[in-house]
Length: 262
Image 1: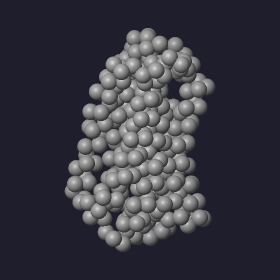
Image 2 (image 1 turned 45 degrees about the vertical axis):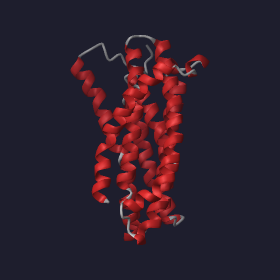
Image 3 (image 1 turned 90 degrees about the horizontal axis):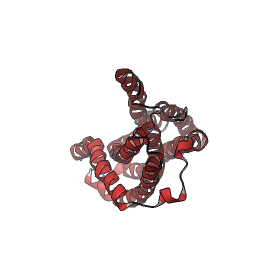
Image 4 (image 1 turned 120 degrees about the vertical axis):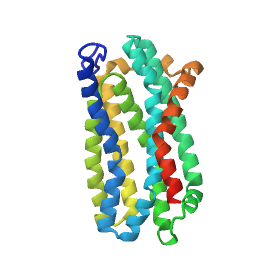
């Protein structure tokens, strides 16, 4: 076992759980940091209407994020099981399958969310004077869904191998980058609410790229072979059976909030 993987079956169970869970918990909190920073900076430097526009889409953003977090976490459950059992070929097979499924999910969710976003904002009774800014902001976020999928899948894979700290470090870096980009796009380039959305997508994408580079350089156990990319229908079916319920569980609160907001 490499130095960048951790055997969660050896050592004190309590200590292992705590040291693994705390970075994961902090990561979930900082995933919400992007939209919070967008709201604060837009409100301070653009104006109240732009603030309202970004704020009005917060529940939609949380719905998308929650769904993707749950789905990708579910995809990697089998990865952690195979890794714990010492089945490295089987573990790599689950990673390849999760990657293919995630690409499909990214495409489907991007198309559906962008196609139905305007009717959803109308259904939520978004005020006319902030509608365009809200629509522009959330459409950019939807166009960048693949960046959220990339980070959450790769972070989930690293966690499946017992490494919950590295994804947190990359997330903290991208959260700080998001602040810088927000200020540059909004103050320097005067892009308004759209600038905040672009900053978020770019920062999320960089966190995913950093995870990918880390895996490529530091985690040889995850070097995939051609056969690992071949879809096993039974394996993919199990990943979907685990991932979809987790996705809905993560996003159910946002669904309720959208109903209340409308």
